[in-house]
Length: 316
Ligand SMILES: Nc1ncnc2c1ncn2[C@@H]1O[C@H](COP(=O)(O)OP(=O)(O)O)[C@@H](O)[C@H]1O
Ligand SMILES: [Mg+2]
Image 1 (tube, protein in one colour):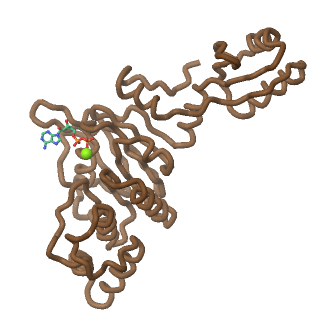
Image 2 (image 1 turned 60 degrees about the vertical axis):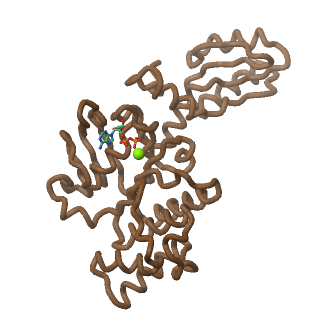
Image 3 (image 1 turned 180 degrees about the vertical axis):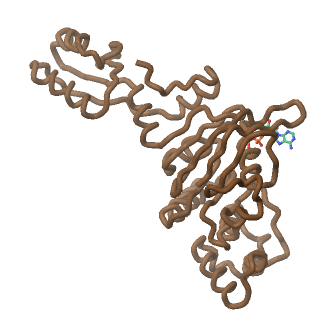
C-alpha cells in the first residue's frame, strides 16, 4: 500500500531524513514511532505531498506518489499534527464544506457526513461550533474529515498527543475499528507503548532512519527471546544448573535471588521441552516463566545507544 525507499531531506545544514525506507502492507495498522525530532512529521509531509524530498521514492498503492501527485491524492486521508480549524463553523458545516471539496453535494453529502460523524461519535455535536469542541473531539472531527472520500490509506501524525487517557483509548479503539473495516493506517507517536498494544506492524525511526521494523508479534517474540527464563527449583539446584549448562539453547546462567535466570534462545516449544527435561530428571520445578518483554527499554537501547545496531536480531 505504501512503499518508501531512500528518502532524504535536508533543512539548511540539518539532515532530517537520512535514507528512510518503509513498507506498509494493505490492511496494516502501522505504528511509526520515534523520539521528538526523529523525522516523523517530515516523512509524513512528504508522503502526503506537502513537502518534496531531496532524494528517494514514495509509492502509494503502486503509484509513484511524487510524480503523480494528482492521481494519488484521493487514495489517502491525512490527519496532521496541527490543524487549522474553521472556528466560526458548526461541526456539520465544517464536514459539508470538506465534502463539497471532494465533489459531494446535496443529500449524498449530508448522508456521508452524518454517517461519519456517527462513526467518530460526534453526531450529537453536529450543531456545536468547532471552536467549542475539546481537543479529543476536534481530533475525531479531523479524522471524520479525512475519511470523507473513503480513502484506502489513512495517515495520522501524533493524533493522541495532548489527549487524556480515556479519550486516547477511545481514539485507539476507533483506529482499530477502521483497520478492521479494511483501511490501511499509518499512525505516528513518540510513545512506543501507545502503539505497541494496537498495531499490527511497527517502524521505529531515529535520526531520520528506520532502526527497527516488522510485524509486532515477531518483534515481541524476539524481545521475548532476549529476556531471561526465570526458573525456580525448591531443591537440587546444582543438578538443575548442571543440566541447563548442557543445553545448547542456554546461553548464560545467573542466580537471581530464588531464581535461576537463563538466557535461552527458543520459542514456546523449546521452552516446553526444557521444562519436560528438568521434570523428567526429577528436578522439582516450582516456577518457570519468561521475564515479560519490555519493548520500552529496547526502544531506549536502540535510540539512545548503539545507533544502527539492531539489538533484536538474535546473533547466535
Ligand atoms: N521546515 C523546517 N526547517 C528547518 N528544520 C526543520 C523543519 N522541519 C523540521 N525540521 C527539523 O527536522 C527534524 C525532524 O523534525 P520532525 O520531522 O518534525 O520530527 P518529529 O515529527 O519526529 O518530531 C527536527 O530536528 C526539526 O527541527
Ligand atoms: Mg512531529
